Image 1: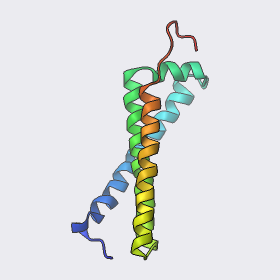
Image 2: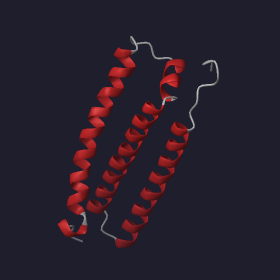
Image 3: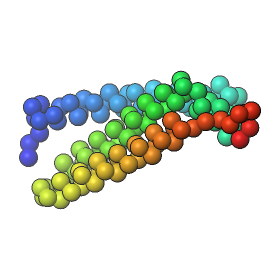
Image 4: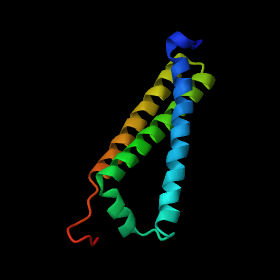
Length: 122
């Protein structure tokens, strides 16, 4: 099965590059914040206080969504390239979608529901 521009293949290819660039920038920002902005000290308390703010929830949700889409889109591209049986390809792509959605939901629940208790002590 040949994938052309009309089949969405070009969009998936292009989005893979865009999401990869976003992930590289987000990873560098994440590394800088954890290792330089906090003087190299990474404790659960510091991370919990940062993750409890709306700004960092938004940043981490974006990081999560792009990482899942980028990674699982890559899996799907490999499946389309190397699996020639239509039924097996359908089963594997379906499995990738289910696993990706489940991981996304679990990650979102964790990030959105993260709160620092009153008094800031964990």
